Figure: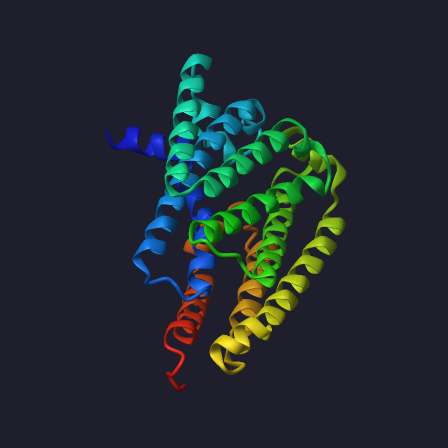
Length: 297
């Protein structure tokens, strides 16, 4: 029974559901976290996107099952180890995606539209864009952007432009670090696993990572001193949270270059205590500023 549950969790890539946490960003940063209606809408939206994403993950793993067998870690994925009939796979994908879309529709039609946009992005990526250098990572980042918009639409709001830019650039940063990790692990066989890696070099990826990490810090800094934030808090104390962002990005670069991690940001987050603790401190500091603005420290 335990093995079956693990197989199912691996098939649905449950660990990847952490990516959908970006749906809660508009709720948290708008100061409406404790409004029950909004919170429920975001939880339902999160659930819908998890189901939809799992459906797309299953489809993607089926398409890439032969290439995944060349990767030391991805070779352990369920569809790389076990053959599943195409009819069964179609039922699984259709069931997950259908349940996800229905769940999003229960929130409102605009959230459903974002879920459909996410599916379209995934289809275009899997069948066309994943072989196009640089644009492949941009499409991955757009998936995170859609999550932010879905979270905002779930509460009837509009996310800050700076917040959208921060998430988009951060997603680019994570995408390029993943490409670099794959090149390091697979070396000369990298392009056999992922064709687009034939067009990347370690030097190019390092330059792109530097640019993205710099922009992420700058955009977040501008967000913390934007008129929207300053007028809401009545001070510039949010700008001090840049310290956590700077350390978090530097720590992640350390994990990529020294510890040779970077394939799975979620795994890095939960396996590296300094990074995890940094994020907890950031969430705590920002939470106090937004929800307890009169606290002095």
